[in-house]
Image 1 (cartoon, rainbow, N blue to C red):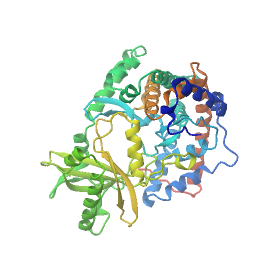
Image 2: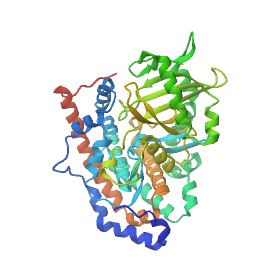
Image 3: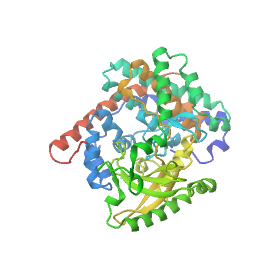
Image 4: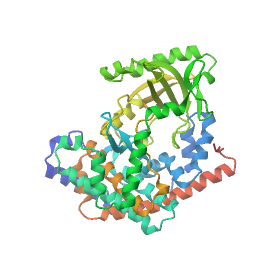
Length: 467
């Protein structure tokens, strides 16, 4: 059951807390401590195939190839499977704007518009309103799966989950006592990260954190420009690397007509920006466009790199226009419906993130096949620091789990009711322990689904391709 839209303004704090505690009757905290597949659970390979039906056909085998690299890579591409598993089970009805795919690699160091380094959620393709615990469950299971890949013991796996969920629960209790604007302005910048981890960081952890911060600052749009483009007789152009990067000129027989269409698309995108950012965008000119293969779960969706130049070739702007399809959560929860899925992604990102890309916008475009599709647009790369869980020992993984759990609580507190959620969670570790049980059970299910996809490839039912 979703909260009424006037919930936070019509009830006093004690009434909101009572509402949260009463949610335990619908979904006791202990009910989150297990996972058992429904008797009518769809075949996981069929779920993936249905999702692949609308994607670029020649890239679908690449998606399957990446998912078969490891159970964790499979999990990253299987948000649709988990949505079908969470939909039928009892939920709290305590609604937030969900990330929708809150696995641990979607938490990263990012640049704010003020050029500060912040820690935040990065991927919003599946964002949608829904019960807060769905994001927490996806995050918890990702830590179990990543810890298993590192050969950690079950106790070490559970410790990472406990740390993550405890950080979520405790920070949500902090937000429950804060003013509304203070919650909205809360940010996980470098100072907040040091404060959060100070009591737990040894010399090795401090060194690794400093190195990660330094690497993130080098991952700028200028670095991406140097890596993804080359000097040609016509000037700077995107470097082909098919099928991962394929220039538009190699995908169409009429590049001039396609460039005309793209200019119209960019104009439509520009209208979704605020006036001052639209003014900034129009200082650049379109130079080149290429299709790019991205991620694991997103492989096969249409994604374009847009190269624009300002004053000269030393003044680049790289945009990424990524296809936005309906969220995998949409069929399993109520919530606002958008006439453009790119707008859904942008709205969700702005609600969840404390500082969003200044070029974040959306548009609708006709593809090379003539079909209209929704896209969201953002800068390709800007100070992104990506975690490498395969290099973490149990202690470092727990530190990262604390950051992720705390960050997710901040994201949820912006759109949901922190008083009600904190009251539901309570002051004990009951919910923390329950999520560790769920994480173990769902990691087992993920292993079985991973094996099912491998068997489907071996049987010739689907084709996988490694690049």
